[in-house]
Length: 363
Picture 1 (cartoon, rainbow, N blue to C red):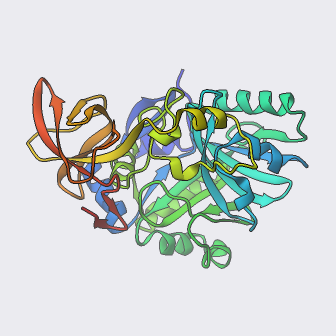
Picture 2: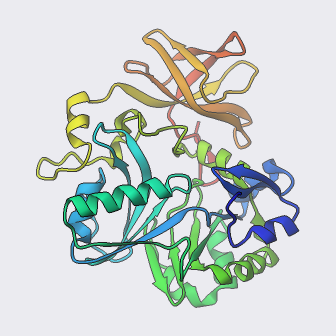
């Protein structure tokens, strides 16, 4: 039986097309996926991301625990509300999950992990806390006695619409910098979006999610589904777990080297493997020059050897087919390559793996 977010009934009332997304009953669109995509790039839209799992950490050893658990360095977190994006690795250097860490106090952090990996993530974290004998309590907040829902409001007008509906959060969030969060009353408001546009991710008590969703809709915020969320994040060059990386892929080969801190003084799970193996592939963008559609798992032929598309789709902003791909070292931006699409080799150009952000095409 599929799991449901607190907003499931609202999605169905709006006529959303629902799909099985990693065991969750989720809306893929409410009509036109293209219109939902453009709403976020040009105005604002909102997504139910309550299937994602907030995890609260509490205890004296929170910081040393996270220092060993993830590839990025939590020593960078010194200001309350600051967020850090990173990966949690296995011993072989593969990505167990990518996640966001919010620093609240030295004894309290909040993580947000992916929906489909939450159970294995929690098991891994608890096992490591026990192995390292760390004083840290690990509490998932998606279910249980005080469950949270998450609504992401994204787009150039997103923050103004949120303040219109929730004037009580304006004072705490008006000066909020990108990749920071603020706690205010019952709301946890973050500025760590997944679309390449500005906006807020609002965590709030699950029982209040329906009221917020309807108020935002009445204020002109467009409900958007997983389809638009995927094309938006692809245009913004943002990785999707399970497609662009997984437990068999190093973050160095997934374009996530910037989330890895190989500081000599700090050890973390997977560091030895990353140091020994180094980078084997590079993560770049592709723009299709011929007629067709780029999709995941299509083979890419280059002069330096073969690669593979990890994520691909039609870009509503660029009006072209684009992709993220793992390619051999030595391939350069601007190179022409070929992609196997249904047995035909079609031409594509290698680009930076960021195609559009802040309402603008970047290539």
